[in-house]
Image (cartoon, rainbow, N blue to C red):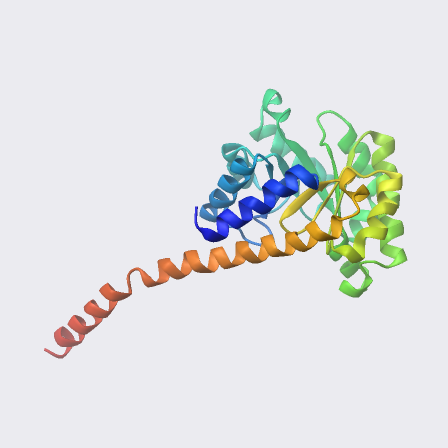
Length: 266
């Protein structure tokens, strides 16, 4: 492990022991995480003894589910599930890839992140609560606020928070997990505590997943700043990794270009 990865490992270990971190997180969807990147993150997660949460590319992303199974992902999240039909597609896909005995080791979630999904939420949580179904909902506040035309400025608005409380209430009534993501920082703590008063299992930043019990910690703001540091280290690590790949053939390229000029002009 390089210097950045060791720092990331230290952050995760401390977060696991002191702040209720249960997983680090990657996305095949918005981040476009490559397989080699995922393997690096997976090694860090395994050494820190935390899980890996993976947002796949869509409700029927079979190849993504196969990779998630291969790498032992702990949480799988399907994005942009806006209708009962899309949720049925997701359920069918995970049933195809994961035999029943293997599903006990994975938590299957779907994102509610648009006003269309919110309009269909009651029928979708009913489907999720059936068997086969899935385990719960991730309320994506950034995209939900955007779908309402409020932008990032509306994430902590009453309208978004009340919608999240409504989804939490439905999940509680159906025995489903409820997770909140989207611009989680110290500013979000009052609204996270409102969700927790209704029903909340976990909340997540871009790269970390916390148990809801962490909301009772007085110094939670410290680790939320560390979550920003973790993401920065991850991006720096990516840049250095691909920078090395970019440079490793440069001497050979220069040699061949000089030879080609001679051959081309000869």
